[in-house]
Image (cartoon, rainbow, N blue to C red; front, side, top):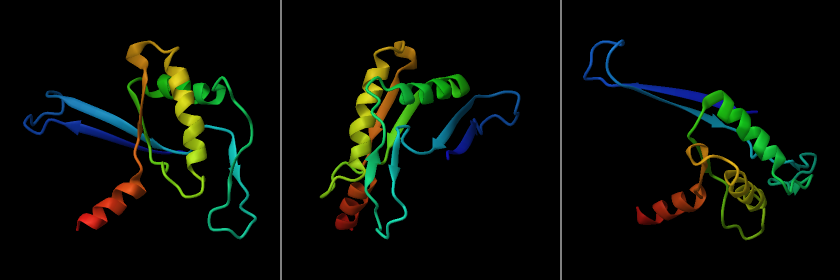
Length: 133
């Protein structure tokens, strides 16, 4: 299930809503568009992640971002917050499938519609910031 947030920015130096400059962005927060699952019937805090279906041509990812481009246009920027480093592979399994799919997809998109992928390990960043304080 995806959550959407829209932000519209207006140049405050202009007092009229019919004049001035506007900018907007839509943030969609959701799951990694791959066939994956977790067995929630187990009593584990982090059930193992399973990739349920191979998708060597990134068909599912392509459908997802085709819908995004049709609905919102470009640019599309992915901010992947999935952990990069883990003692035992868990979330990283998804990134290892998702990133190559984006690289593959970008080969077939015109440069002006290319998808930007940014991997940011928030847990690692917040851990490092805590040490600085």
